[in-house]
Length: 332
Image (tube, rainbow, N blue to C red; front, side, top):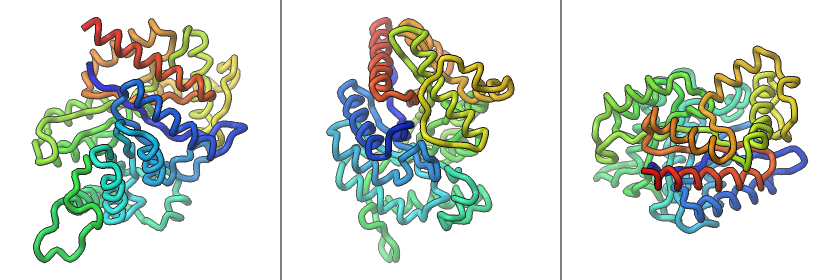
């Protein structure tokens, strides 16, 4: 059975604050480790009141320091916001502190709006810069060569797995050309998933970092003891998407009883498209939904994200997801 992993945005819920969000993140990471999840990734976003993972490398260090075995990483670092050398130094530091446990996923979107991108002091006018930045970053992880004037200290010579993230064909092509593992953001932008996977697998070139293509897919999972409860929990994420589309991102809202009264038909259509890769329900629905998704798309790994309001419900959802995995493994 393929590995399951966790994607966390360190959500800040209404009535709470970032300190509590960080406590919840570490608690969830420890739970994930005890349940057998392979990785715990955090994502870079800026100027989003409901997402506390902006300083992603710092939070990765917090989580890695509070766990023992689970891999911890970025899903991802938005490279246009950063200088490659500094990213290499940050993740070289993390890899030195927590050997064999740090992943670096890279994205080419700014992870924010244009005014915030400007405030980050990086001016990213063309996707052409991203491949150069990726290759520069990879170079800083290579052993230092004679006469090399600039090196990442720490970073040079360390084995830090580098992934490319994407929601289109761009990063699929680049990760195939560079021989890197690829993670597709199907949990919020699934439209090009099948085409991107096919392209990546077809065009993959083995590299010193990876001999065979390795593709991870994101999926929303909201599991509860019964389907009605799960559907209600899912309204938190549905509301968050609508609020973002309305230009009013805020703290993560509590679930509501009547989502139909909240959104317009057009908003509903948009959310259902964005969240098409979602498994929501009680244990039978979750088991069947995960089995169908895996059988259809054949990922090498699943990255599960569960965006619900109550931390206890979020923990329980990840417990049920791993129970479903165990049942699927047992069934062969």
